Image (cartoon, rainbow, N blue to C red; front, top):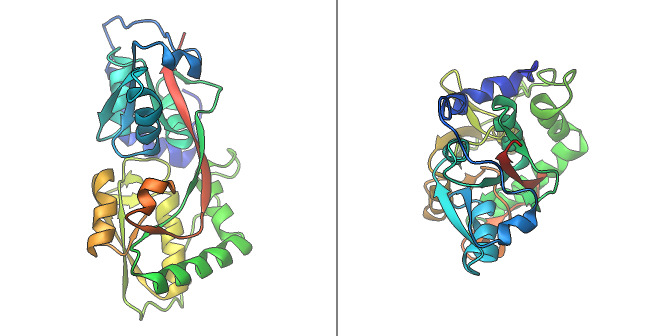
Length: 271
């Protein structure tokens, strides 16, 4: 494969086994050429449980009888099923999609975007003071360019990757206690495992926020659909896992201002 960006290459530990899945076996040809093809009534859409892709696929296709939705705990598992011909496509966020496609040359992303979305931080509805603190911190990190530098460090151009890693100030004050972040570290480059640690865009962003508000960051890894319950039960202060603001989620939690924009895309088998 090409000289994949430094951080993305490390993130591919989650997807490493995927290249082995279809060896020695024949898989069906790609029959999803556009979003319109999902309405044929005989397609199987793979999604990660609880994600935006799951929500939209369920409401727009499964409930209308236009397609079946297969749900997986990890995006990597959905991609493995696609490679094996068990499903016809995977709907997932654009940056993780790039990771999987870079690793698997028998896959591609359709040019047509599926949906746009804004990422924000989940906070319990009772914690308005923390929301105000984080929104102030996010505004400062946007204004001084820190958020842009964090993103470029992971998904910028080849000349930008790895050049602007976030580092906490030496004199940072963490006297206000711990900020517990619930996440699902199966979502490179936003959060993933590397050298027995959880890293990624979201982790660096949360660390920068914690530094601003005087807290020590603690990251807790869990299933994606456990993140919101962790926030509402008080086991975690914030939920950060490439989470899109939706009306359904707003029934249970509050959100900070958006810190990133993304889009849902469709991964298919390459022609």
